Length: 168
Image (cartoon, rainbow, N blue to C red; front, side):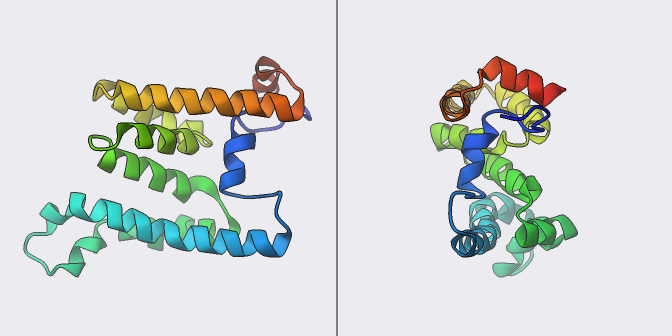
């Protein structure tokens, strides 16, 4: 693994689910388009029951306007076009906060994938801690640890060394 890699060690493994570099370019492009199109639709479906009470005086479909700036903004369009992780991370965090009471372990997996951008996810892990969602935090930690070990197996570089390279 080259020095100054610029990303967290677990992102080498978890990031392949979002940007599958192992696929031929044409297949990866189709995969990315489907993923980045489905992302806002699925997130809107998850968020809708959560924001619906905010819109009691409007029509049924108008409740979807609450999360729409997330998908219609410049970063949202840029992420869909160029595969940027900012909005993807935001969608994963948003889904986690909406579903954590019903599906704590699934939300732990979502937070692990959102941890590809730890500078965005760290604060929300603190929120989950304050909400006493320990099962979610432990699940996220387990997935991250497994991804960290997998990155070691693939690259042959010790996890601590990978972390130090990232910080250089």
